[in-house]
Image (cartoon, rainbow, N blue to C red; front, side, top):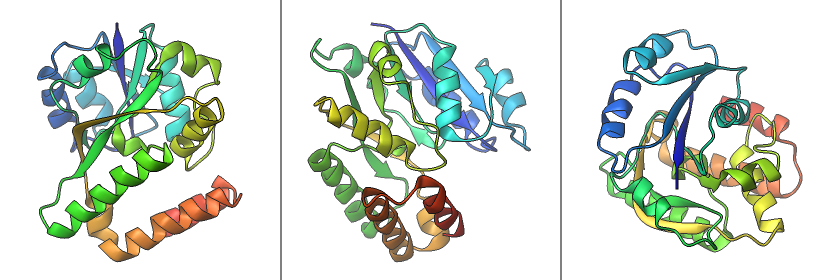
Length: 225
């Protein structure tokens, strides 16, 4: 089963070298790796090309970028990963070993900060995801290409595109495979804005979205922290 890794990028030059190094540790290797840049002002594009990664340019917005990346692949599976995340070396092997009844899924997440509070946060994120059947982009969502195309890919919206994708799949009664292998992701937002402030923001935005508040209105609040 072939797998393409798709990475939406905007000013991620600081993370791309490490990401490329991690890709070399994957076994088996992916059939395609697509970096989708949305107008980076740093050296992201130059670095990605120098590292041997295929670069696609798209309009800004993770949903737009991930859909654009998917259109440049022909693999059985699509794996969407953030540039500040680190996949376990056997990530692709685990996806390839899934039964035919598996349609989509995600990994458990770990934040790259040492303080004990982050162990609690990531545990709650993984527990919530397992219970709600909703995954976030930090958990490296993977999905069969045919299904992704069937539902029209990510809905074009400025925030909560990952939540919306999961809601569409839930409506089709397609439960995710919740792999317990760890994807490590950056805690930079938590560290910049503060742990409790970020927890309150994230939970509030999710609640408001579930109540029908538009992603456009929520995106403005998210940018303000």
